[in-house]
Image 1 (cartoon, rainbow, N blue to C red):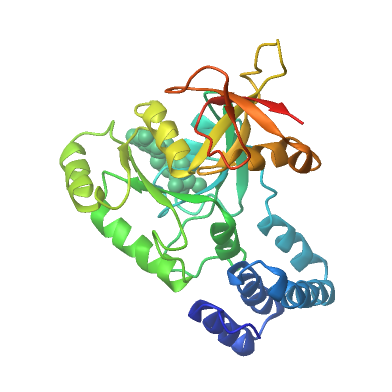
Image 2: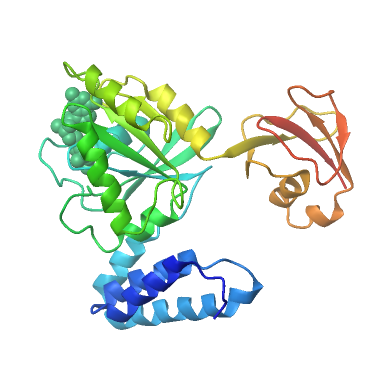
Length: 314
Ligand SMILES: Nc1nc2c(ncn2[C@@H]2O[C@H](COP(=O)(O)OP(=O)(O)O)[C@@H](O)[C@H]2O)c(=O)[nH]1
Ligand SMILES: [Mg+2]
């Protein structure tokens, strides 16, 4: 076994050994797979884990296979954000307001029992939001932790009319039980919902004072649409991505269809995203962007910024 596996891996492995049901075993193996660093030295181990997961799933029958399929939501768009929070905080309402999905919204808790993805539009990109069942003192469904772990960010929806500080403390400890630590293996932002209700402002201020230094805290009303543009912008920021536009010589760039890259990506990364072969063939590129000379010639290791326009020359 590679020596540099994080302690979390050993905890997940212990969970696996203690697991009784196939579902618990699969969850533990999924976690081990998610934690394991991806490089040549771990190729074999990762393949083994995948094989064990496949075998267990097959042996467990159809119901589990269906449930397991629900826990792997293929990433779409520029990023995947899982919505979390206590019952009735407005998670489904938010997903239904800012995406094309329409999960059921209701005044009684535990309406949402599955994970529903929807696409949110922001400027010229789309971000995938996943509505999930509430986190509560009751155990979360076994397939939920892997979804949260795999997401690029978590959006915590809190009900401002109902002891928001307490809700967040409970939420944090529930995440800890899943070994998800805010800031360490999860980017988190807080949507303080129901700001339309009376007397919620003081609660918002208290929440902001307590968390603002660590996490973005945005006041919204999912129902009335307040604060949603600001929320979308913060979601974009927390994803740590940049949009890069390509153009061909003598033509205008296509601003509708950016390449999405991690912040800090280079020209070579952009070329690879355009086409696998392009990276090797790339000689140089011209870049247009804020604070640059128009059409500046740059090399492969040039670090790109959000909204740069590139013209690749092979
Ligand atoms: N006043 C107000 N009520 C909201 C808002 N968002 C959701 N609700 C209500 O809160 C209840 C729970 O909403 P839902 O989206 O099902 O919560 P979930 O359990 O977190 O998915 C429903 O009665 C909604 O109408 C909001 O922004 N303002
Ligand atoms: Mg719901």
